[in-house]
Image 1 (cartoon, rainbow over the protein chains, first blue to last red):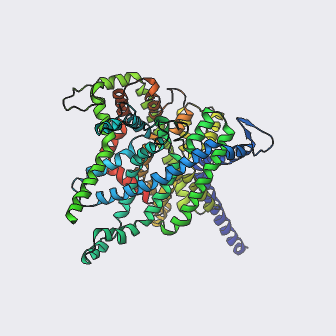
Image 2 (tube, helix red, strand yellow; image 1 turned 120 degrees about the vertical axis):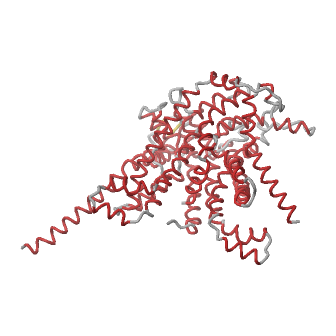
Image 3 (cartoon, one colour; image 1 turned 60 degrees about the horizontal axis):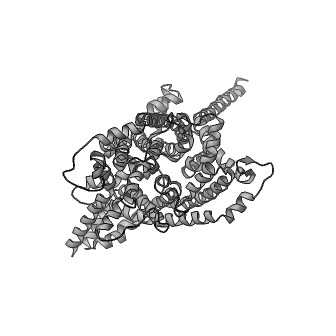
Length: 304
Length: 269
């Protein structure tokens, strides 16, 4: 009897230990998961629901495609999407190229590279809103610094923020200034992991610095470039702080971006339902980016 | 040829560095000189502190600064505790549904709270937390980035250390506190610096959820202060800007190495 009882008891102890471990794990996760679900997953589901069941700020009993129908007919949205993609298509590659150049300079043998690194990185730690105020002054039509400089060479000046064909590019310039130094950091980290022997070998072969960059440095930076690319694209869609100071999306939506347009619809026009449909659109863009990241990058970068 | 190229490259490096620092240099210039020098440069322009005084009186900076400090403190403290607990469970415990939970956590890396302002506003209005510090902080308390970063670090801690602590009779919380937290100090520093600079600078969500001086952080305060219709001149705006970025800038200059290394470390993982 004792014989048959013993394994049972051992098993019971073992299984209680296992289930207490389960409970411990869930208790540890509970606070973080509650908040994550409450402010990420629940609002995603609610946004999708509202885009079908909402009308203005009301909540209808029957689902409707009205919000999506309006989405397809909305000329402003077409403008906003065009702006958003152009904005990403220009700011992302330019920031990346500058970031690589900065990282190479700072990683090299330049005198005073510590100061240079600080200079490049400083915009990253400054709030977008505060520095946008300074840029607003650079861009202002009569007394602005840029037009004063143009005045020196006899140019009449450009309406940097008021001209619909220029405003978006003025925003891009500031974005590149804000972001390039941030991306430099990732390249700097990657450069320091490259095996010095490769460069020694290249030196023996008498390779030019362009060949070294093209054949050694750039290929080895590829995983970083992909990582930065996805993050830069993400930022291009979620960073709209400077619009609030510089252009407010104007003139006539010429510099409006998707997230700002969502904000306008929800909090200026009080069309929560349409804002939800627009958010769904933004979520789709993000899902595509996520798939890109997990499909392409995860294969190359392996975590410990 | 190669020599010219080198000189050109060095020149470009410094020119770019100058352009990158220029807005800050300009703001300092405009802030410490009388308004008439805001638009023209003169080496002998008289120095003044008037702009700082005017800016300080123009907006309740003290209150804004206090709000920002309270909000970033709540967020950082919450994140450190919640992320540590969750990261340990994900790094070292076997439980049903771990993969699913981890995937749900990672989702927040893409779908950041800023994008969900519409629904999150409704949720916080329902909780009566509009225009409170907690209202600004709550959506950020559980950070997927923090959980991920700490999980990666915890995974590198030798299992033997944990086993030794278990034999000594330590509870799960004691193991986390005595074994894992001390060994992950560099990660905590890295995450803290990234988190503080992110939330010190955050704007869109605080703009949506705050209405009054009671909870409004510096960034939202600055956006009202700097609005052209408020009729404040450039020198005063520059002074205000410097006041608002001052603490973070001082922190950055003091801990420059750690800042850069933290962002680097946070980026690699």
